[in-house]
Each structure stands twice: as C-alpha cells, then as structure tokens.
Image (cartoon, rainbow, N blue to C red; front, side, top):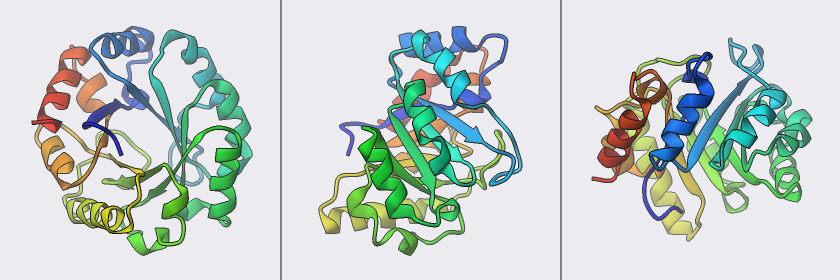
Length: 221
C-alpha cells in the first residue's frame, strides 16, 4: 500500500519532440512514478516502444519506472526491461499461461511484480496470486490507445479489490489505468486506486507540470 495517492503519467502520451523536457517537468513538479506502456501489436492493436527506448530514458529521470507489458509472452522480455532500468513490471492475466511462474521470475530479478486485468476480466482470476504480487492494475479502458473514455464500471471493481485486500490483510498497490482526467481522478481515488495512470491529461496539456499538480491535488483531496 502507498502512503498517499500518486499520479503516474503515461509516457505513451508524451510529445515525441519534447519527451525528455516533459518528463523532467513532471519530475520537478514532484512526480515519483512514470508509467511505461509497452505494446506489441499482438496482445493489443497498437505498437509503442521497447526496452532500448526505456534504457535511453533511464538516465534522464530518477522516477520509479512502472512498465506495463501489454504483450504476448511477456516473460521473454523480463531481462530486457530489468536491464533497461525498470523498477516495476506488470503483466496481464490474459497474456500469461503460467502466471505464478512469471510473477516468481520477476521477483527473482529483483523487480516489483504486478498483474493487470482488462475491464471485462473478473477479479476472481487473481484469487490464487494476490498474496504474491506487489501491485494489481485494473484497466479502466480496453488497452491499446491513449485518449479513450474512462469506464465508470471500474469504480465498483476497485472498491471490491480494496475490500479483498483488507480482508486478506495483504499490502499490494492498487493501480488504475485508462481515461483518467481531472473530472474522474477523485472518483477513482476514493474507490481505492492509489497509483493512478494519466496520459493525455498530463502530457497532452501545454503545461504538463501544472496538469500533474492538479490531478495530484484532486486525487488526494
């Protein structure tokens, strides 16, 4: 669990010509987490960037790198993202044939291990792994593209996940990703999200540092 609600700007939404500048701006504004959406064009209908790109970014920031692997057979890339400087690596239940093995492999590499669920995947799919993960990510859009509309049904899913965590006495971080903006960030936070991914709402703003601060204030109000 985290001590407060944290906004994790999604690097996928950064302006390719100003990416380093934008990353530095949000970090100087107090941002601690940077979300890295890794897409392979197979598990999701889009392609983003890979470990080599992350490796080039790593020297520019001291933020916690939170890599979200939206890829088929994510275990093939664990070593690469570890070497690139990631701190957290999250895999999808829907992409893993042997989920427990993947979570164990991440931890053996010294990484924080997360597991993600698409909007229509029920929480019961995590029942046997919750005690072994550091983070659970609930998607509030169908993954693959920036700028989608937040699915309000995730609020109940977040609330139930928080209740499950409390009942079992576990301490994994609850993360949400998709369609977050200034109008709904407080709702997601109140439902249980502690790490809140925001892409266009931060890096799509002319003043991304100010946008980050507004989201952070609303999440913690």
